Image 1 (tube, rainbow, N blue to C red):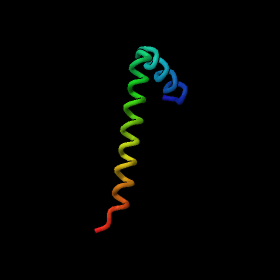
Image 2: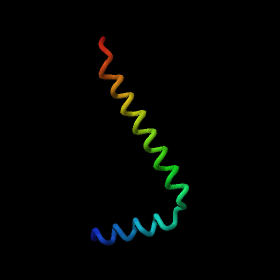
Image 3: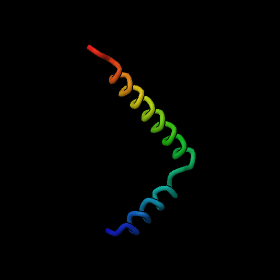
Image 4: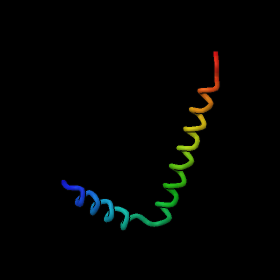
Length: 48
C-alpha cells in the first residue's frame, strides 16, 4: 500500500462522514487534549 493509496482511502472516508460529525470530533479531541495537558501541568506542580 502506497502513500497515495492511504491518501485516497482517507479522502473517501472523509467524503462519507458528515461535516458536523467532523467538527464535533475536532472539538472533543481538542477539549480532551487541553484537559490532559492541564492535568499533566498540575502533576508537575505537586510536591510530596
